[in-house]
Amino acid sequence: MKEKLQKIREEALAQLESSDTLDRLNEIRVAYLGKKGKLTAVLKGMKEVAPEERPRVGQMVNETRAAIETYLDSARKKIADKMREEQLKKEVIDVTLPAQKNHFGHRHPNTIALEEMERIFIGMGYEVMEGPEIEYDKYNFEYLNIPANHPAKDEQDTFYINNDILLRTQTSSVQVHAMEQGKLPIRMIAPGRVFRSDEVDATHSPSFHQVEGLVVDRNITFADLKGTLAEFAREMFGEQTKTKFRPHHFPFTEPSAEMDVTCFKCGGKGCRFCKGSGWIEILGCGMVHPHVLELCGIDPEVYTGFAFGVGLERIALLKYEIDDMRLLYENDERFLKQF
Ligand code: DAH
Image (cartoon, rainbow, N blue to C red; front, side, top):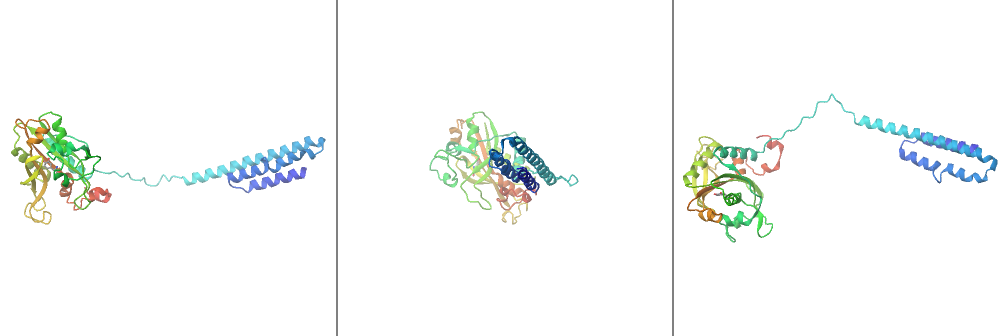
């Protein structure tokens, strides 16, 4: 019996010696000390041992078990130490390496153009307003003199949430919110994102930005509109910039116009940039239609107003001579870094 236990002990120790994972150690523990393990089998065979021998054999079994357990413990510790050492080696930090530079982003060309516009209009006493991007038909179309089935709705097809709620196609919707609040006079600009079901190309995107402007007060005339927008153009594009108003049609203004500015590349002589004409179109504008004032609860006999709408991307593209609108949305750092 003694030799048998001796053999079990040596065998177990040899196996522990040569194992290098905690899983393997556990296998060995089960194989020797487990319910069906080799040492347990010896205990189970005690009935064959003569009664007077039993205490001695029992003691030997216990010693063997203790020896195997001690060895298991130290093997476990050795493996754990080794794993920890490897982990530490992997995680060594070389403090002499140069630090990684932080990347600082900066303002997007759209934002730069918008902040410039806001600066100009705030300087003229305007306030900056915001309106919702998800809008009722009433604000985006109906109160702007574009009733159901008006052809202008076809040109500004958009994404409908239901028959009555849509993604706004123009920031002109904020005009209605401003007038509805009922506080007069109004001098505001309203920048924001608008949506149209347009295909993406160099000059179109299903989502872009506009800046709306609205003034409502007593005695506002077309002269105020012209003077204000001419001043805006000079500040935005340079002191020598001239402006020209071409008659146009918008349902919510009467009369309506589009404003051109002299090409800031060639000064109006005509170049590739302005396609030889010397002029560049930058916005739509007009006197607020009396019917729109009425719909919004303002008496057109007492108050008049003017409004305008500028495509923000258009300003950014012109100002920074970017020839493809898509570049503004790709967020390529190499592009954005240039502004
Ligand atoms: N909302 C018009 C558009 O998206 C632009 C516009 C034109 C706005 C004339 C105005 C305006 O306020 O008076 O095409």
